[in-house]
Length: 337
Image (cartoon, rainbow, N blue to C red):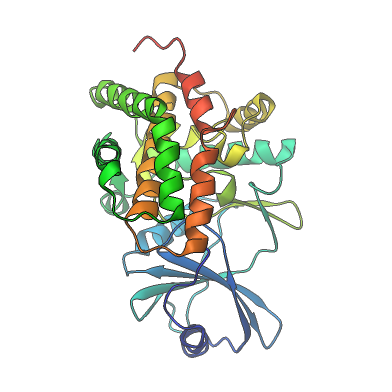
């Protein structure tokens, strides 16, 4: 998010002092991520130690912590565990938000830096370990399970049908309306194909595994020693492994779209049968979800001008050559269903 949440910086500093014993000297807002319900900060203590602070609206974020703990216990090195409070908790409620503190990792993410062959291999190994992790039943009961829901597809159809009557006609809204009208046939193709594939897959018996669900370049962090970490476990899901594998070669933000990268990744991941129909479904459905969310935020939600400009830029980039729409259609070529 490019704009801060409503909670004051002083409230965060007071919480860090009281609950974590951290004497904060500076707290800096970081304009990162696309989640409008979250803000992140960099805190520096009197001892020059750095912390990554995540502030999320609401209180139901314990499952992401449970997953991170489970993965660390299973031996996964590419996960960052939250720092505990002085009372042994891994989250703190503060106002209408949940505050989580992590050690600050100096580095870059996979959007701004290319992974080396070694890092692609390690990422493959790490994701295979995630997919092989035994998830206790009490955790499974709290995690989403893939049901190939049509909610997002219906939302996009509804938004397109009401576009002409949208009253919010600021600059970004007008630009979005024009772009959607010019690309309406492509958007209908994405929605209809996701619907068709989803209906077919709903009747299949497919093994579900623990999936990160959003493992694009922005959620892979590379530190100064070239170690990699998988971050942001906020939306785990039990689903076919292709739920995660669709990002490898998927082209989100115009990276991770080279065949050589896929080849090295799968050497690390190991021998596996990738179901192209499931891969095509997820690549189509992910774009449909993004269209629904971008359109809602740009047209109907109270979003800052800066956030709107960034969202519009991200929205139109999906339709560029070798980006996600192009790759989704290529994945779907010559499928028999």
